[in-house]
Length: 513
Image (cartoon, rainbow, N blue to C red):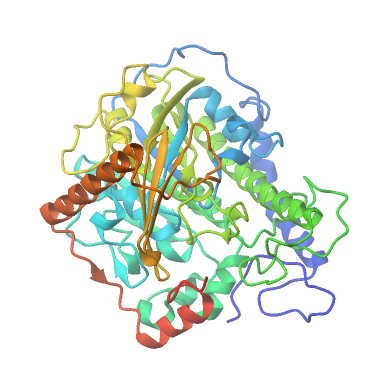
């Protein structure tokens, strides 16, 4: 393909392919990237707190702006349990930790699914996946649905989005409502001006996306837009991809958390490398996780630089900032790697941090379960906009301000892709899973079995019948909601030959388990 890809270490017994550079070149690329931003970072660091330093607890004395900006950041594949503010021991997230100390952290946020496309559709529409209909690569977001960007645009906001992974492409309808929606992948030219049928899930593009390095591209695009539009009232969405596999962070992040490793695991080709499996040596698995943590720290740095820009220009305290993710990833906790395979907590739990200094108390933590579909209504309320009635989510502002829970916060997660038909419903106490493609149902008691190791498949007990009946009512409500809003799926126009390529890559087709 010849497009720029994430730098990757070439194994000794392989020749460099179109998506791999030598370690020396990788280091030079990193130096070039850092040279571009170092002067900026130093100039604004004096105005920022040191990395990871917490703000004083208590309500900040910040006056409410007349028309606050809203910044929504989605960090792809980010597990909350690998962030310092969620209890991880490694210093993977000093800037996100600082943001949490200045805002509100939601301890138990749940996604609608375990992969990128439908999760972002749920984020933008505040609807469950089976309701918005954009749950597989052959579907796109129905144009009759109203997105978060459209709601802000209707209130006079400039709406701008920056995406860095293939499933955020306009071909899937996720650009709906954005005045400016910029492709920050390094292979953007391979997509630009072409129908998705020409590139959709192309083998080279998919493998290249796994190696792509996008954080500096995203930052540059965001900075360029802000430099020209800083006086505008804006809703900005930023999608950051680099935490997604492959786990090959640039120096110094590649060795930051495991400098003594001498093995062969590079983090490259994570999904397809058969040597990366649940029986791999523990030392190699530990290094793989260290590389994932390095990707988080690399991305955390860029989140910090964006926030520093907002502070330097006087915009930070006039902007609602929310950071979340679309899903997590698996490291063989349930015999699987990556994501888009199950609905266990390691893939559906997501971080959620919201900073709004004129409304929310810094350092607050919310233990209640919340959902990805609640994020949009929360941002609308914090921006002072009227609530919406045609969604499944609710504003979290009352919870964030220590008011009692006033809505049913049961979380629905669904995976209707790659030959799987799985749905779960979750509370803080229990989780019920319907694996329809295997005709299996079970529940787990999360209070005594938080890692979901002891599924209860006997649903004839009083407890089993009670939870099963609850699940059946949820399904009935989902179907009614879908019928009520007429969210008919629309094809994304991916042709049969490309679907065949997808199947060979493991993106569609049978479960293969």
